[in-house]
Length: 130
Image 1 (tube, rainbow, N blue to C red):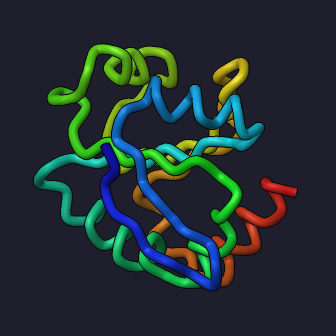
Image 2: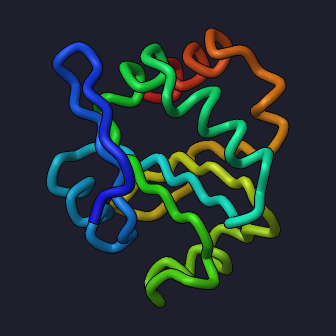
């Protein structure tokens, strides 16, 4: 139940696809969750994924988070569908940093993220994860 895996400097980065299971793991490991929500025909989603989520700097920054990739809210299990209502997701891409204990949104990004540099996004993540 993983999306993709990369190994970055002794940090295994695995993207989970089942929200409830990932939340359970995040609570156990006391880690925040990064949830990337995209659509099957979303070209900016693909561009963001390639620019940031395959980048070694970003993956290293996200090493101590639980990462979740939801490719299509309409096609996922019921538990993830509640994300659309709970977090007022109005379109894709939507990328959320969430506290798994209370499901509080810490940060949100959308298609504007593509305009940031890898260094800017990494610095923003580092600040949020500190």
